[in-house]
Image (cartoon, rainbow, N blue to C red; front, side):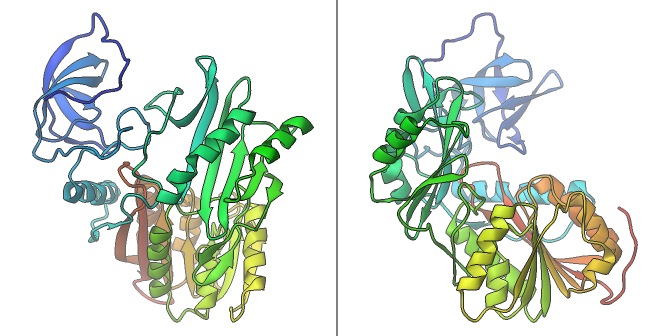
Length: 436
């Protein structure tokens, strides 16, 4: 069986060729093998594979699959291995989902934690409503698509199994925009969100001083009625209709290029878990609140919310959504950097619940304050298993019990995983100052 590998890549001369037995999958989805006591990373290798490979340091490039793993399946996407997005399309679905669960189990175990981890809730292929595409002038032409694997080279998209069908059909419009404005030097990023009112397109990499004639050319090229809004470096240059998404029954217009969960199905799963865990709470602090993914559904469910976020445009969007909706409990907002100014125990005394959804760096400083004197219930949402585990170790050392851990697989076919943990104090109303 011949392995798939990127086309037009010449065989390297002088590099050692070896036969490797792939033993397991590493945390980033690469196969792991050993040779002479050294660990070797084998991209696109699966446990049970025997491969002929070319070594470069501690990495191997598969030349042939001599014996295929029983876990190996044919990838559905023609871009697989050339595109830098997916790394696990060749892994059978049950084993793929168990790998995702194992990422969380291993991260928690490394922090000394061994709670039950539920089976991942998977969005599945064809569900990503938000994606970032790249464009640049390469090889004398404007190239549009995704970055290649571990490369700045842009690979054209001939069919993507991850994004929604609507977004896939919209790609020619994005490519036409890229051809108008791709910079002479550097790259262009086109972040697009499929919304209820059309596509929200945010361009970055052009600089804030885009000449008027280039802006006019962009607006002219953006004549497709499916474009709801077009922005350049955060500045709106065209808006046919405010891009709208529905969060917990509330309509929200995110800021240009703003953060949004990658799939609506996964967002719904996370919201359901948060609402269930904080059911009956009277006043909740939503930390790292963004534009209100959790604030708005909580308020719609009858809970007062104080939303804290460092980005002013996200808070503005949240406030506008809350004001335009009927029947919500009050939602107050605060612009605050929780990395440098976490809520203190006295601040936290006002709340009977907390939800926090930090970026990949996690919320170590805030977790320490919560451990010193947080409310009875916490929901921790994370997109990084290692910092998630670190923060939970801090909370458990401070008197919290992990009641539930649920992986959310919204980054289909990648090694990334979203996680939701529900925690409660072992002794309600009492705080233990603990350090892991």
